[in-house]
Length: 112
Ligand SMILES: [Zn+2]
Image (tube, rainbow, N blue to C red; front, side, top):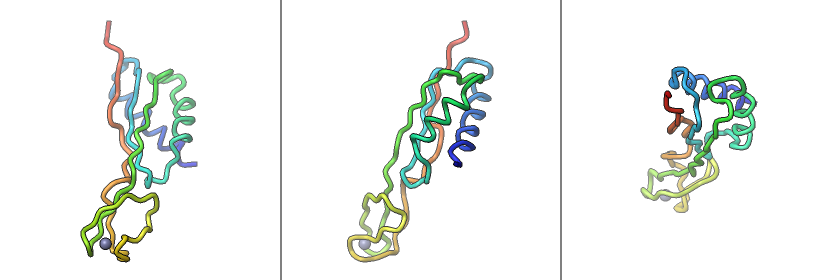
């Protein structure tokens, strides 16, 4: 399950950026074609965050639909699959969205 190592990555990046402050919320972008399960990420997050600055923090997962652009007809379409052909029949399509996996924002507790 590679969601665990992804989550460890996210937690360590956020913890470093928080510089000792407690983290209240983390928002991440997860493309639907990124090959990760949001549910698994959420589960791993709770486990990995224990004992870190992110303990008890909320994880907001923003799912981004896959989008492709056809190189032949120029059409853009939403897709849930990496291998979907365009409506015009062309398979020369490039992905323009849906493979994101990044931290969008984080909220830390203000220093007293
Ligand atoms: Zn096309």
